[in-house]
Length: 305
Image 1 (spheres, helix red, strand yellow):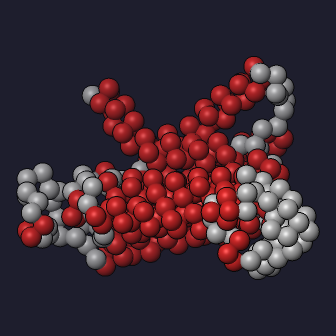
Image 2 (tube, one colour):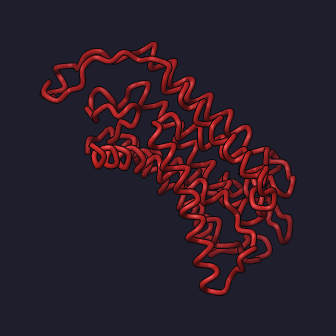
Image 3 (cartoon, rainbow, N blue to C red):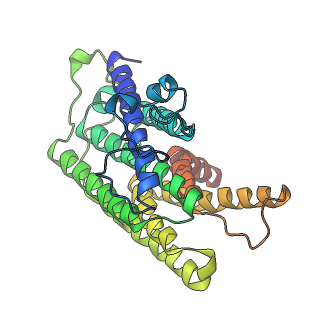
C-alpha cells in the first residue's frame, strides 16, 4: 500500500466521521420537518450544543453520553453512526484505490489512482454511501424514504457520473510514465473513452425505476413510492458499473429482504403480512452488486463457456 493510498483512505475515514455527524442531524430533522440550518440543541432542555461538544465520537465520550447542560442521556446511536460512516468511507476509498470497476479494465495502478476517473468514482461512491446510511436510518425509524433526500440524491449521483464521464473524456490516459517503475507487461492498451458507461447508468436507473413502478402498480401495499424512486437512484449507480452489477444488485435486494423477513417470522417478530422497510435491503443489495456483481457475472459466463 503506497503512502498516497494510505493518505486518501485515512482522510476519507476522518471525513466520514464528520459526515456521519451530519447524517445524524439529517436522519432526525428531515422526517420531523426541522430546518437543517437550525443550530444543534439538546432534545431534552433545548440548550444549544457548542461546536466543541459536537466533535464526532470524541465529544460523546468526553461528555460520557450526557448533555452538558441538563445531564440527560444522549443516545449511543450518534457516535455509532459517526464511527460506522467513518469506517465505510475509509473502506470505499480503499476499495476504489485498489480496483478499477469501470468496463472491467485491469487494475494497473499508475493508470488508475489519481486519474479524473478515479476521483469521480470515489466521490460518487462516497456520496452513495452517505445516502445509503441516512436513508437506512430514516426508513428503519419512520418507514419512509423522503423525496427531499431521494430525489436530490438521484440528481447528485447522475450529475457526478456525468462529470466523471466528461473529465475522463477530456483527460484520457494514453501512456504509462516509465519513471513509475512499472513493467509494461500486462498493462492495458491505450483506451478510447466513450459515453456508454454514463448512458448505461441512465438506462439502468430508468429500467429499475420502471420495474419497481410495475411492482408497486401490481401490489400497492407491498411497495412504497419512495422505494420506486430509490430504485431509480440505485439503478443509476449500478448501471454505470455494468449489466452484471445491475442484475446482481437488483436481485440481491429481494434475497436479503426475503431472508430478513423469514428470520423475523421464525423468531416470532413478524407475521406474513407485516410491513418490512425495503429501502435498507435495496441499498444493501446495491452494494453487493457493486462489490461482487462483475466477478459473479464473469464466473457465470465462464460456467456457460
